Length: 116
Length: 112
Image (tube, rainbow over all chains, first blue to last red; front, side, top):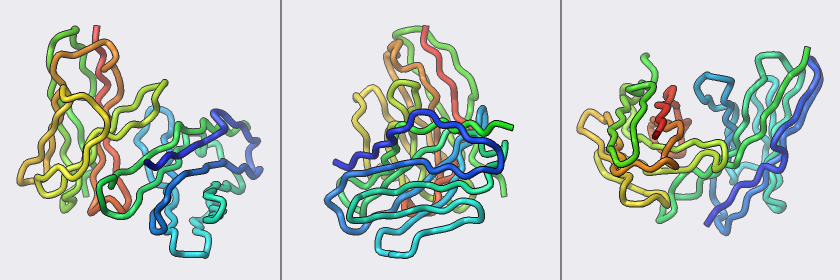
């Protein structure tokens, strides 16, 4: 079974600085997808960024980028120029290819606080 | 385009009762997934439906069940409620599981 581990339950960063959230996963699959989702306080969960395992190039979305290390099974999220609105719970998620275990598996989350 | 809606938003039940939660996906989305979110266990997958068929199920007891209608709306039912069922139940819709999941606001269930 796939597992996703986020080793940092909480993190804080000053506004305008850069922060990196860690995520590791365990799978025997070769083709899979990785996601970072953001859940702001009392607001709906939204997708931040997505990475296909077959793509070597790291995904980027404006101030958000990932460091995808397939061999190390690591998928960290870097937030540049942090803004107060980035304060949220961040979840790393994994899904393998269609099959018997075809489901989105989430890590326990990292609570990120951006301080003014 | 309207987002994912879930009803009711809040629910208080007592042990032993049963509850039905509803989810209306984004128009055109045929995949609907359900998750249970608790502070201790985080987000746990309950089940996923695609075109009225349950494609996968998480590790939850049989008290948790669901279904999907021809218009892609989905319901989940929890029978014989236990205190540990208190959680935020999230529904997400997508074109497919490999696509972006759009989450609803959730239903906060409290079991007394």
